[in-house]
Figure 1: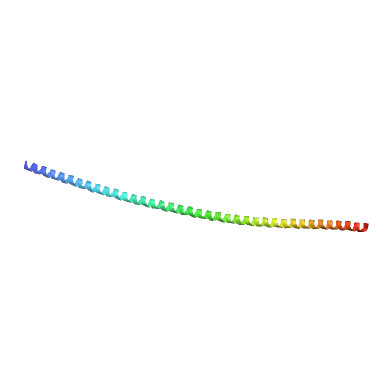
Figure 2: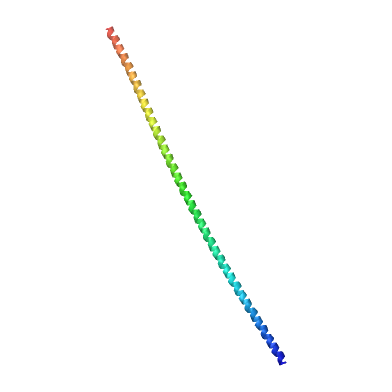
Length: 136
């Protein structure tokens, strides 16, 4: 009976040791799995952070490009406006010069006509005066 009790104790001790080993192995596996999950989460967080940084750089680059295009369009519009203003001023100068030339031509034509009219009137008065002088 004592031998049976001894064998039973030994079997019990071995069963407990095996159970403890299984628990230790299970805990070790659980710790390893938790460590892997933590590493995976850290890697994912790093990836997310890097993606966020990349997106931020892309957004900044797009904003800078839009600002550059906006500046270029603004400069182009200013150049076109300046060109149009210069063209309009040149056209206005030409119109003014043409108007002045036309006014001078009209004035000269008017002066010629007035001179011719005055000469004709003077000739008529002379003719009348000569006619009256003959009559006397």
